[in-house]
Amino acid sequence: MSESETTTKSEETSNYISQRRLKYFIGDPYSPDDPKQLSMRRKQAIIAVVALSAVTGPLGSMIYMPALLAVADDLNTSSEAVNGTVSAYVVFMGVAPLIWATLSDFYGRKRMYLASTIIGIIASIICAFSINVAMLIVFRAIQAAGLCASQTLGAGVIADTIPMKQRGRAYGYFYIGPLLGPVIGPTIGGALSQFYGWQSTFYFLAALGGLLFILVAVFLPETLRKVKSQDDQQRSPNHVKNFFQAFMPLLVMLHDPTILVITIYSTVIFACLYILNPTITDTFQRLYGYNQWQVGLVYLAFGVGLCLGSILAGQVSDWMLQHLRSKSNGQVVPEMRLRAAVPSFLLIPAGYLIYGWTLEYGIGVYAPIIGLFVYAFGQMSAFTPANVYLVDSQPGRSATAIGVNNCARSIAGAIMAIFSTQAVHSLGPGILFTVLAAINVLNIALVIICMLFGQRWRQNLVSKQAEQESDIHKQKVAIDIHRDEQDHHQHRQVALEHSLARTASRHSTI
Image 1 (cartoon, rainbow, N blue to C red):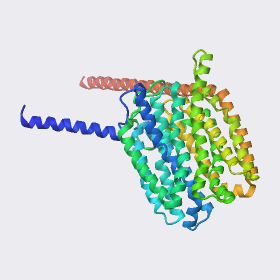
Image 2 (tube, one colour):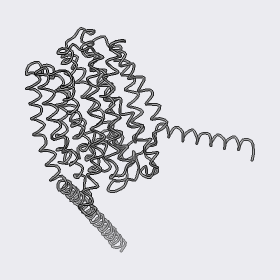
Image 3 (cartoon, rainbow, N blue to C red):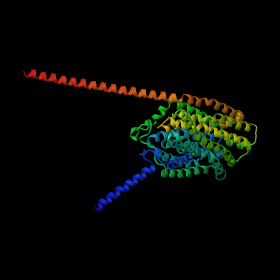
Image 4 (spheres, helix red, strand yellow):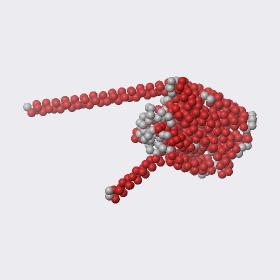
């Protein structure tokens, strides 16, 4: 072999290795192997990476809460205007993941992880340099668009890698990541803003985003498969002819009553949460004279309740599925998971009532904190089974289903956040949180309806889609037959014309 041939072969090998490395770091559009066949240790590592990545969205929201009044003073604006920065973040926390999730179902999870993280890092740095509340609102929205993608993308990764019967526990552990935000966010944010100014919270988020970018690039493989199990269809990026075609699954999901009912159920809970959440800082500073660091510790009880509720709800969801499966001769339907939400029927209203009336009558500082813990535990007892149900009932479209749910509830939460402080001041905590408890009691009816009728709705939807596909197929067949008849008629017409022409030619010759 000549020296030039050896050099060429070496260059080709080097280029191949470089391309393989690049594909690994930015992610192939599709995984060539079945991620469900990975070892348990590898799956645990993947869950750990996506859980840590999902910290950033809720952390970006909660790290900022203890500093709300400090931001208002520094930017010379009102508390209502600063609540607008919370609302902007919450809106894009719901809308942006919907876009990321839809694109990830076509172009892969890993690429969307990396792109969204870069946006979050840049926006966090700019937020720290905000000179007025309008600038802060704009870049808080962009920050949310980047930082909040990980929660929905993580749901898609788990659906790609974890079998259905194990997903409840996997989601329980995954949601520890997003729920670490409410646990550590206010405590870190309170300390940073107390000693280094509120801008330091955004520098912290930018640094954390950089660390998570490296973790995803190095340790997270692409999990989206080209050929999926069950009823999922083979997809390819080449099938997406334009940007808007990627969002067609969203329109399809609007016709699914199970998604609508569960989304409304989650939205009501989330809207009520954002009447409570932004007012904790104002309430404890006004009634108890707490500083930013102490307010952060109050949020800590809230976050611990969320984490414990998520873990236990996920385990109960899996246990419930196995228990009901044994009773139904091995038959499993996603609606079985919703029974794990039953404890929340009592815990959410009880938490609101304890919190509201202990504040109303000034029964110490620990009593309302206990109310926050009870409410938070109940909230995740509702959210975890609902989210796992959406994943199990939408194979192949799990990330988009979660995105639709997050979008609706985040918009509702953003609207409520604007009026939250005024509502507490006008009605008082006792009456306001009693009203919220009553709303959540009525909301129970939605999940019960889905338990009873969800399977029938999904079967009817599948039948309708099959009929529509059959009608479309029949129309195509009819069109093909009509074209064949037209072609046959044209061929006969041409043949007849040729025959007449030959006959005329013979007569003219004679």
